[in-house]
Length: 395
Image (tube, rainbow, N blue to C red):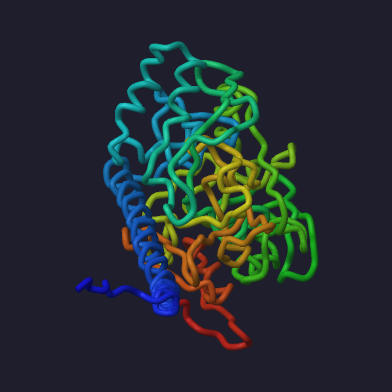
């Protein structure tokens, strides 16, 4: 007698497929969330490594690396990592991030000046890439760059950084208190008093006359009122000798560059030709940002065209590796460029390293005044939030 084989009916098969589809739909978001959690943790670890490398630099050299000269200058090994270094603060971290071979290649220039820079600037460094955003890779770059060995270096591609140093509470409008301690000066400085009225006076008049109280007011800043947002003008020395001459200017002269560049002196850790020692961080190392994630437009992750991502990772002072707290931190958003702001590709939080070496995830809902206070190294004041005076506390 022939046995009849058991099998699935079409209805049973469809039911099984429907069940599998339902389970997949339920599990896929959880799998994606788990993957993003892992990427976020990796990103936080990157910030921690960079923060530690900066702390080690300060311990060994007595100061944090300089912010460099401008975003068109590349590092020159013979000029160290302090304010004579035209390259960015990122250069000062290399030997402490297992990148000494790259430093050696820049030092020896065995392939010739231009070829060596074309090769080394394109080397991806995973520690500077957030996996939630993009893989570590070299992206197209435009512009002619300078170094100690050439006044014109064309780079077809260059590595980028998803992290930025703390430039302070406002690049175009640093708080007026940064003038404290400069002494007298005759250079005319444009400033905004109490966030309400613009004026122009020499440094002596601001500090010695009745304007002195404005150096303590939270809304008084260098620069005209209402001029603090938008693209940041970055003046660039034409030659090494020109940059060295800039460094020798009196401090009041540095605050009013004739070429329209933003003021040298800022209230963060990294700015043009900076040399910040722990003693200058009067608000406390644990209460001052050091480095963190930067905001980007997702449409430009791999194009190299985001206004805050145009320059090589190791290039000098600019929004590609320095950000400010004048703009609120924000999650990456398609079609939106926030080239001056901190932020991240993560949901709800961005990661910041502090000057004491600690690392913390902060909410995008952090109060703007608290965010600015944590970016300022020595404002030494309480914050007025919604009409109430409170001491600044780390979230």
